[in-house]
Image (cartoon, rainbow, N blue to C red):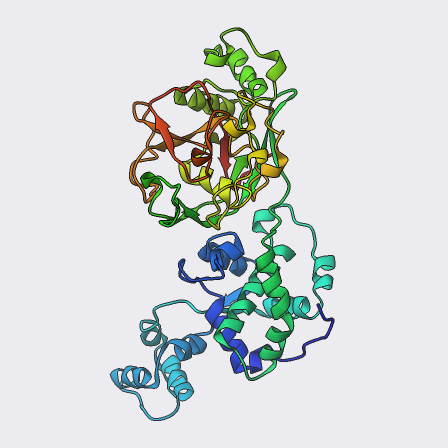
Length: 444
């Protein structure tokens, strides 16, 4: 990026005011460009981002005169003045000033949304970043709570997204255009690269030598299910639709025999079907299998009590987003079948393998074994699409058939897709599970 300094006065440029007040506010969730929307760019719901930036003093509500000028036409302002028995002649600014002086409440009643703009601090941060991003990266002080911090990475995502939309909508005519043109190539490259940094892995200790590892999955929408054009898809994978999922932490690996043994030893819970000949000492790092849905739930409940962390099964939507990311890819690694990236029937192994054996098959969130090795229980009751978390499918009812995902070492290619949905009442010999934790929470 060029080190050229862009010198201009934000508050004196009509395009800047329009730019900031239009885009620094919540956008419609279906507002997309290049497969990326505001929510995906921020990694959190826009309303939450706005609230956080207001708390940090980066955003402020625009003054009443700015909001009125943005939302009301001259004719509307004249009608409000007339209703207040005020003079109706003059330009918009004069009418607004007249109304504010006479009765602010009358003007406020006509506004139907909040308009936000950068504070002085926001202007300073934006200009500093745009003219010399390294200075911002170098001078940003460390913070204790990452979720509540305006990190350089988050600021970068927001500014780039604003600029990207500005290019699309043609903000031209002054220094904004020069700035957008200068940064345009880098912005496009950043979004096409699609290699965001999700943060460090987190761990929770079950016992000495037995820990659960987690990868962060940011909040946002993803494409769930299979496209109508996918000839390998089954009917219950359709229609493909967008689903919003809150941020969560996803188990990096399925629960292993070693981790499940801690649970059995601590609680006296029944052993898995696959341990009928004794604990498999040669498979401590293989996924546990031969567990029922009720067994998986019992493990999560015990782990939550033992660690004080809200450990639970993943919903079907969380599992699928964790497996395939946001772009509707067929497999965790992309859209081309790679039998060497996972343990399925094509591998010819005919048994489980260590959970870290297939690093090339990881998902966009660095999660392993989402395809193959063992099927994985979810918390979700099997129901037709579209997926809706509040329609009863996430009710806790062990009498219902629940969804399990991902395939196993016995699975053929067609069922080894991230969108394939299997279901049963309670037990398969080659089914295990993976756990998750809602975010944010402290791992300390």
